[in-house]
Length: 107
Image (tube, rainbow, N blue to C red; front, top):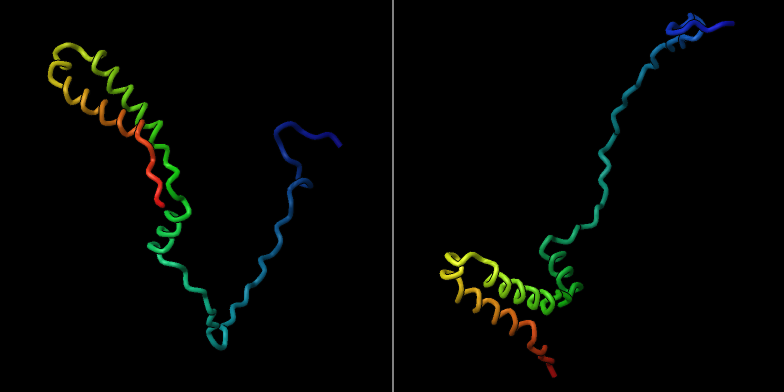
């Protein structure tokens, strides 16, 4: 049998089946499922913070901020640098202090 281009033959079209009737029934008694109570958002947040600990990389971040504030004091135009020179130096010194200070250990 040769197939015609762009047209279907009658034998290749699938036949539609008759619709199946759906029967709905009502349950005799509502089923009550005992669901475990979910922990509150505050409890989950507290547990997450406890498990996370103090792993935030503050030292590298503070040293990078110190470097960026120092570069900004040289890279800004003269008009802007005259206004923000001392705050940039203060921010650079503060972040440098935080980056180099030693961590206190509780005994």
